[in-house]
Image 1 (tube, rainbow, N blue to C red):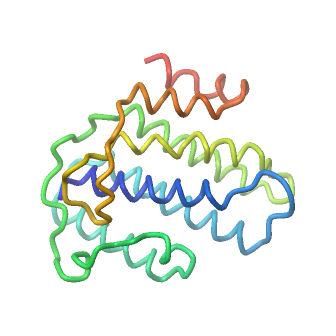
Image 2 (cartoon, rainbow, N blue to C red; image 1 turned 90 degrees about the vertical axis):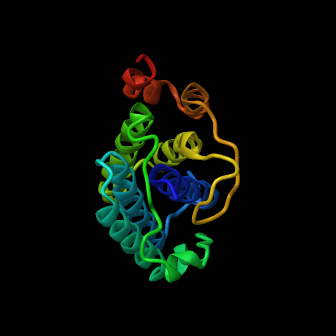
Length: 188
């Protein structure tokens, strides 16, 4: 399996899950906020790992660590359909053909995840609408790593999209303030 395809799939499933459970109004329970924050931190680790140079042992250990974190969380466990290979094989990620190919997308993902964490740490003053908009803007970005017909942990077998399409879809969910904040990611 290819590193960015596997980790990109984890990001994509995570963002789609958060998009589905996120709401911009109403009361957010403490348990939801705690779960969201934990998941965003996990996704940020995955995105940052994608920027590191490929090392087979380290990347496979990282993948197992992420797997065990997800399996230990009741909410996340049911939303990540890992294939059985993760438990059976020690080495799943065997190469990284597209190392740093979509660096601008990955940098945008990391910046947006950091911005969500900043908002979540504001306590009662957090901007729920901003968090929701960021999640909606994020959810298509990892599709640049998806490819049809390759082996991955979840066997999504979904077509990917180009960087240009991913950025366009992301912009469609942004308001004017967000467009100005993330403008430098779109003008490269």
